[in-house]
Amino acid sequence: MRPRIPRPTITRLCILFRLLEDLLIEGKTRISSTELGTALGVRPHSVRKDINYLGEVGDIGSGYDTARLRDRVRRKLGLDRRRNACVVGLGRLGSAILAYERFANSGYTIVAGFDSNINKLETIRTDIELFEAYEISDVVRRKNVEIGVIAVPAPAAQEAADRLIEGGVRGIVNFSPALIRHNVETVNITNMDIVREFTILSAHMTLDRE
Amino acid sequence: MRPRIPRPTITRLCILFRLLEDLLIEGKTRISSTELGTALGVRPHSVRKDINYLGEVGDIGSGYDTARLRDRVRRKLGLDRRRNACVVGLGRLGSAILAYERFANSGYTIVAGFDSNINKLETIRTDIELFEAYEISDVVRRKNVEIGVIAVPAPAAQEAADRLIEGGVRGIVNFSPALIRHNVETVNITNMDIVREFTILSAHMTLDRE
Image 1 (spheres, chains in turn yellow, cyan):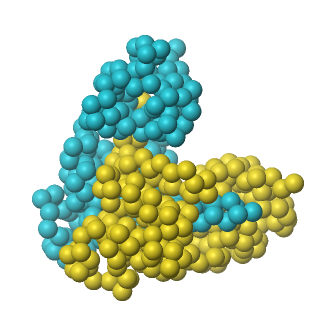
Image 2: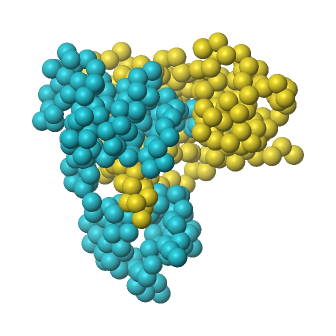
Image 3: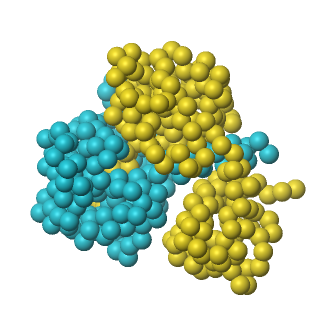
């Protein structure tokens, strides 16, 4: 039986993947777990332990072959699959995400934007197709959208999530402060509320002083 | 000796704090750990365990007094302290954060924005004072900025962080994909790279299917 990869390991392997891509651009063809640990801010032992979940990955004694390790992470985590995404809520933040140029060469394509305000839809200049909010689940299904970004105010967030999940979305990035509830086991939600992050940083500042 | 609050508990208590504020707005004056657990998506036992780090907080049998618990979390984590923040990098994302209206009643004030491009500084309409990037450490020190938001492209992120820390910032929210290094023990960095979150969600989609 294959061991299930723990969630924190999945997160760390995704960060490792992005680092390996950068290292290859810099022309670094071999890399040790010590160097990886320094770059990632974790112990070399933890790096090796995470990498062990990928199965056989070449000689550890002389370091890893960067390209081979990158390919192994990519295949194991399915990161070679291109996925479609959409943005719900086209205020300043939603519009900024819609226009974010880093998606282009990262394997993700924003294929739709939604807002409940028709006037807003008419004023945004973009090549991405825009729709009214009531069309979310239809468009998501039709365009095979797998990831949804929620950038609406808190009171509208749960409804947006429900419609996205109804359409078949399996991953949600929630920029609103609302705690979203759902009962679909295969749906994952990431919360990216900046005020919450300020609060957490603030708490650390207080407690570090104690 | 007082027990040190573990980092994940600090994060959960900050989320609990925001939830309690919402509950008070809704007029809910008493709340049980079971209800809190449901709202937060964790077990009631974990909620009680986290709350125990705050010391004595009223009768558990009949539920918590919402206002009293909120005040306790706020005081313990120092969330009643107003803090100044700044934004470095005023592209679409940085400008959206600069204009984010939720900061206003959350205890944080954005007191400065920075960009290396003078033309950009001249075209942004805002009441917040804007400065050239070379002024970061001076302005941060002068305006007593404690939290810095980094919204510059990856190659400029480390330099931005160095200048913020030099000025005395103790918390950084990093929207760039760069892994920032620093050797000041009292500085905390939160990474909010949206492409990385897409990658992590994508990996979960792949592995959940196995």
